[in-house]
Image 1 (tube, rainbow, N blue to C red):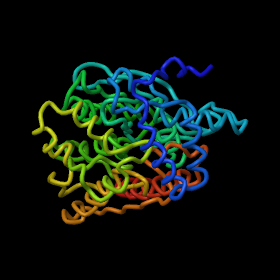
Image 2: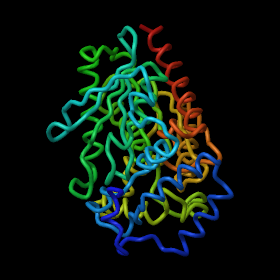
Image 3: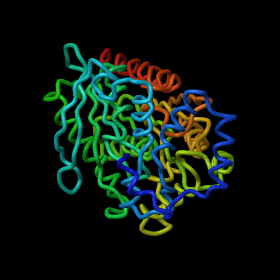
Image 4: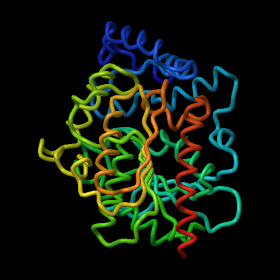
Length: 353
């Protein structure tokens, strides 16, 4: 019996008509391997996050659970060490803004000092953790040959805005101060994250600039939340997409914000932030994703601010594809592209001394 079987009451079940339409659209737009992953995840019976309490939402099967289910169906190992060989990981505690927070340190094979990447997981600032986003962080450690520090920042609604952003900046300070003890070089540091974490990566670069801290040499922002309107082209086009839809994004925003004014804050509404002076930024987007236009708008805002930026959009995949390299070709391509961009600026930072 699945560990999720006890959670399959009618409460929180997706609307069957919307579900059917969503599946029909995905069958036309999604790559074959993306469809296989979506079916494996659906077989676990995920409920509609936007109909649940945060506590219930955190117990739902995640897209990563879907990856593991598909691997089992394919008769393959689900051990992270087998999926990404050559990377070891260790869990620890680091200094957050209001006490210690959990973190996982990934270290590639070879001789350091390595570059270091501070990594922020997704989940709308409300759900998920470093376990759910292990695939992206571990993959980057391997591909970019970097130490990766992935943190569990405090979550809403227990900790409202700006607790998550405060923890992110505190983790950046910690990583700078402790890089050498991790076998890493604090002069070659980057920020990275997915979804809500993609927002935190850019926001932390801004906060580091404003605090006069040593800057990161690169920011990797994967399908970031970058603005506060739910009426962009991609929100309307992908309003009932899976695994992320428009109603879920409203649910996340409602839980993280103390008031509507918070959603206008430049830490959430990055497109209105002062972006001048940031390091080069890489943005990765999925075509079948309400947040695709967020990435495009952020790219435009960075270009207007004179920040070097490159954005790549991947057809045939959905939100959360990046960490699924074990089963998705586009995820493997995206991780390799991200690593190449990171390594280029790591090399530049090393050359500058």
